[in-house]
Image (tube, rainbow, N blue to C red; front, side, top):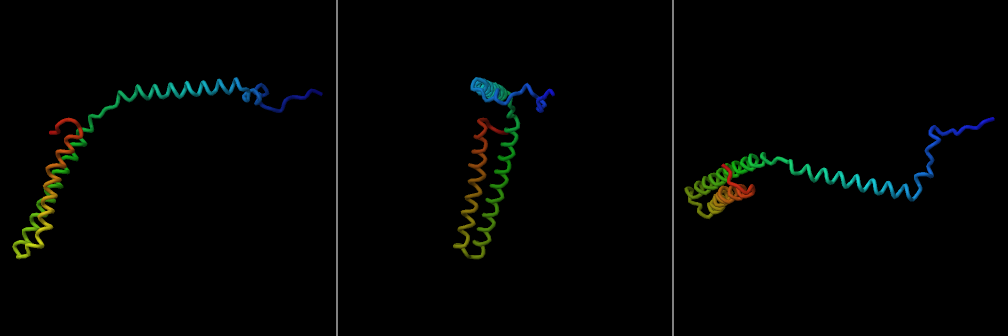
Length: 121
């Protein structure tokens, strides 16, 4: 009686993949594949488009201007009401709030404009 190998793929011998030469070949091929992948990614980075960054920074600058205006105006109103009621000591936090709003309005918008390396309209 003829005995046949019960494996579906008799030509694939598992011991063949444990050979040091085969394992070294897989390591070299894997390293080369990783190198080619990194090279492809490095070339792809030159095609990135940052034209939307200027628009986004313009939006942040507009928000800083509006937020600074609202903070400054609110602090002045708060301080003015306290001053008119005769409580000058209670008006000091409102004046500091107005000063903070002016800082956000001036320095914040200027700092955001400087982040793109160009002036924003």
